[in-house]
Length: 193
Image 1: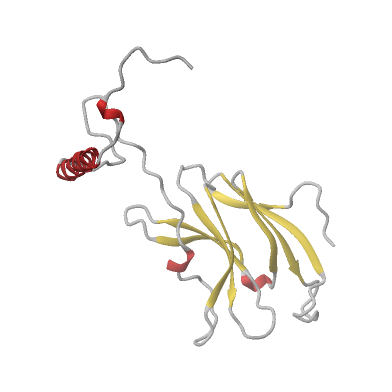
Image 2: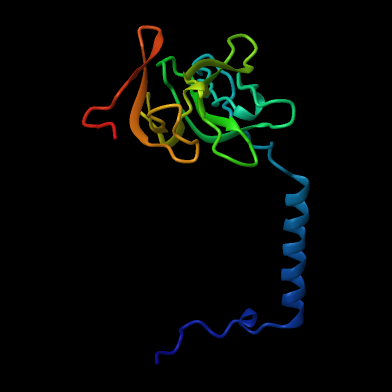
């Protein structure tokens, strides 16, 4: 070990006065920092000649705020069974597509499929299209939305004599916005059972 050329310094041995001085200095810094605070941070940038307003992000309409065109009687309420959101018509604002039925205590109530959008001006959610009317007596399964196309598997009945408990027809359906309307078709490669 090599000896230092500098003689031993007095401050290398701590004494109680050193700790008191350090504590006083730290307390002074903390007190000063609590008095001198920066302005609160915000996510928005200050407006200037070169700044541009950020585009507003529209939210999909909430189905809880909508009255559906479904008659469930005076006691039974409607129930949203499934829900998907996306921009169906390419206007940059998302729509909500829902599968709704009467929340009956027994049986298999038929489903309706509705498109909800926000009203221009007020922004209130409203039903703008019925993709599947509950009068068709279908139950919807495998409900998806991809690239503006709504797809579903529909369980139904071959005749009115088939009991509601036991659907005997299974088909796939899809809806897509074209030329100002939702067009229903059968996805390629599917077969009706």
